[in-house]
Length: 76
Picture: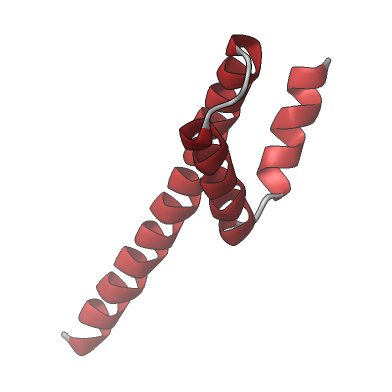
């Protein structure tokens, strides 16, 4: 059940929110001082956040490519 709620929350995260949270996860992992279980949970969250960021970047790239293709078509 928690996985389904997490997936829904990821879909509404903006790129900047996901990036900022990912930076915080990385900072906490690099700082250390967490238990193995906490470190694993942080790693898993980081992986989820990286996927969210990648989806945003892929979407932005697709929009840019589409805009460039439309501009190119209009110029012909």
